[in-house]
Image (tube, rainbow, N blue to C red; front, top):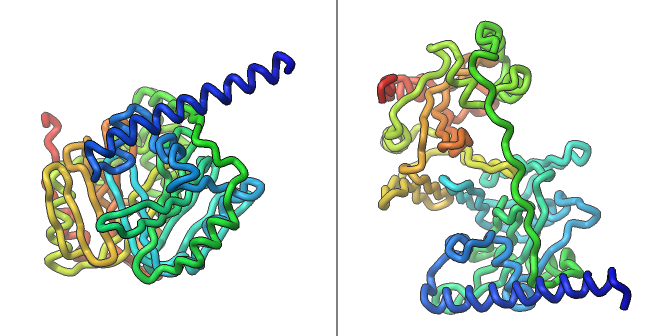
Length: 370
């Protein structure tokens, strides 16, 4: 055996041994805490969730592969499963929505896609997609829990799809067989997420031009272009906007808004996402339940879970569009990353409801000294 092959073999053996040790640690942890979620177990074991899932290969997990890097193929074929639950999350919020992947649109040249089902509404950014697994786990009361899960290079979950009562189990088996990877090793190498560039000093920003460009927006989708043009972060843009276009409100605002729209049955849109996927709920919410640090919406087809204690800033934001001003409540963490965005539901891009504007305009403004 030459030196290069020997090094490769030794590296593979070391990775296998490390995966076996991790598997043993997790087995012990699960014995002590049988209801512990995989994500929480990974945090306790100081590894990524994807690394932990990979240790299940050959038992409860099957590693999947995107043919020629085409992640859209895996999304398109989810429609065969029928009614499922789609889950997208970040560190502070989780969105769960039941529906079907019946209408998928892919944009291969941009490595993007979207799902436009009435229940499941997603925006997909495939540049971050790296790992995928199909899981067939033992759930509560001996029932099987089947899912398809996608992860980024750093091992964080991008999107998960859970089968429900009535999902097509034969289609799931066919899906797994179709996309099963030749690599079913239990070792998984993760890469650290790229660091975000540091925020520029406010003194370097042409605030007057930023505000003029803000006033000239014609769609909410133009806001990303605005931040890129002026090389500002999203929260920096909010901070430097005209005072009537964006201002901080108290972090209790999410609870206030959900309680009020639930009482009035006012339909809203809730955006929760991460660098690889944004999931959108459109419709009314009704069952608002705080539990410890979590604020929850527990409806039949939509669940939302938000760590209220991890909301660093809350903003009331107004953006001009062709259909009039669009008003949103935007929540951010300590790093300035989006937790969730809430809008009025606007069918066919019609003007948002006056009732929604009244709800947001009544939110308590955060004083500068707070």
